[in-house]
Length: 403
Image (cartoon, rainbow, N blue to C red):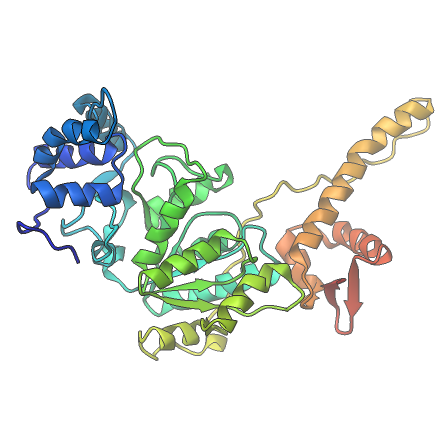
């Protein structure tokens, strides 16, 4: 918690809220600086008045604070986007974040803030997730939701997307790196709309801000800060998910991880976390027990498997039907041009299959369901990959990646 010379109070008037927004939007004022200025000067208005002099003493010439018109425009844009502004200390602001020393002074939210009152668990992982990884994320998210837990993630591809989709019926929170009205990646625009209607989208960034690389670590601290624990489902050694895990540890939160095959690079980060003391997760019961959330979760075998998420990649069109001898253009050059799209489609399908398969065996029928393609399109590609030595067939209709 914060310690102030004068008792800390949240903004009580609209002018106070605008002053908070002007202060945090002023140049060179980050979260830590915001709270220090508020501590030293007692109010955002007083801090704004002193800021140019402070900046000049620090060597910043011609410093100007954020103009009032800029934040008024941001508030108007937020209203148009269906968002509302929360300031730290207000009743709707999440208490879990308020307790952090670098709590966001303001949050833009779209959706149901009542989800903040429930226990929350973060599920994060690889963007290029395997089929087993996405299935595990869906199962964890569905079972945690069934136990009354809100699932938090970052709306990224792969594990994040699977977690949000599976927890939509029970409550999910998506933390965005850019403005709460700017959806990244673009393929999750429809999912974000569903979350805004049935869950909650939040961001500390200005309305309309396009996310940049430096915004994602800031977003990650909010993901872990909201949650009692962070579960890493799949993560390579140098992944953003490990940044979230380290941030969770710094915040005094629990870190949990799903183990993976030692030969699968997408599991190397999770295995390292477990080696270093993270709780090993086999299912939602492990998460609930580790976080002390109760042991009343029904057995997983009695819970329906969360529906597979909609396919987020373009589906390769079926091969072109051969044309008749009369209509087929003559000439070797034309034949080569006609075959190029088919070769590209085959290469794209091979890449998608290899992206889904890891060293751990995966059932062929499950792979076909995950790809969302007819079996007659997938089977020839599997034969080709097997002949190339890139995948291995195992008893029981299982496939694995050659290592």
